[in-house]
Length: 210
Length: 368
Image 1 (cartoon, rainbow over the protein chains, first blue to last red):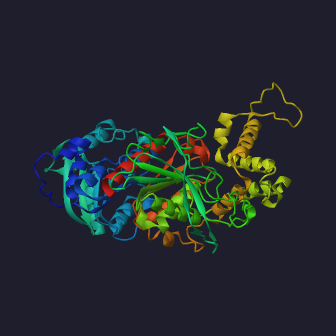
Image 2 (tube, one colour):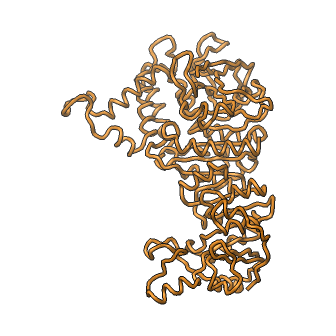
Image 3 (cartoon, chains in turn yellow, brown):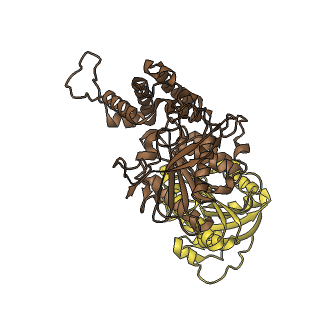
């Protein structure tokens, strides 16, 4: 597993602004004036921030009609569509970064999505909730039921999450696919996790390339 | 806001069919103020039966414009920020030269002597008007239905003059179903004996044919759901069926009313010419390659469709979006939920206004 590299230690204000610590990390990873595609861009908060503060050329895809409307109303070039279909449309190397923030576990074919991200983008930034977190393990161990935690708050029958993965799972897949992990960060709430991330991190953020 | 229609006259206009028209007059209105940099002008493009009176209260008729809910102070096209222009299309009958205009060679109305014009010809005339107003580059071109076709035509043929394009509830090429409905309308007009091969000016216009054409049109502008909501099976001023062929149902009454109203404000020959222009519309110029057609656009796009629009179904907008995306053009797209069918862009405007407002604001901030 790649060691987590040092981010600037100042508290990134993006996290506070958007209420998402993974956004804070992503916002620092993206180089200024780059081309970015955000898959599952929601209401476009991250893209708006990147466009206004880093001058990126931003595109977003979102399946929810109401979220797309709000993203466009923010001035983000977002379109309504299915991530897996949209990726097929783009030629090789169209973007500097393709972002998938906490959506990988909701896709029908995660491996295909990852490969496609690294086809249309030079780099991929993937953030996902870690199913290996101790609270998930304990829930399953002690209740014998599908984990329902702060991180995975849904009942099994109405969860959008259809592919659960852990930090170790992602590392293993990256080795198998020969993805180069350039950076990775592990988060628990607003804190960074440096020890045993597969046990203690709630969210992992990876910067990978082919 | 009281508004007046103004007119601009041009010596001649060359047409796609190889001929030219001279002179050509354009009716237009403007709202708001052009800024010193001339960078805040937006051209609004009307749909089939629209006119130059898009917003405000007409000084001539006292009526609000056809998109008054969308253009004005604080509205989607905010006239406190932008300078908004709308003109009547070529071939129309509401101030711009069309078949009912006087042919200077004969001194009589052109009637069927008017050349068959295209969406491209309409747009070429608009470029003259925009030049006449001293504007080199438009911040945006926007319109629904046939207005959307004109917006696409602008973006493809005059890329250097358009910063952003907003085609709404439209298509890159008229489909067989769209052509079919237009043909029914044309045949209704031409089957009316009063049409008289188009020579009815000064006499009785083909009101029955034109009214039927409009009734068909109105059906295609609504949706099954909006008709059920609006009319149900309610009877018109009766308790039970009349067992005759007078008006029984509300929906019949509505269509007859709309048809008869239309006859008072629209010229039947214009109906023929404008529907023909729509049917000829094909952004790919017959090549079938939308990628080729859209390859050279530089404008930023906001494409909007409506879920219940079966006349210009969402897939037609999505085709445009897909091709733009493949070419890595800047495009925003949403399929708005509405029960109002094709009419939604005129009547169900809350969400549409929200996305247009945000899209224009960021375009103006970043690109103007």
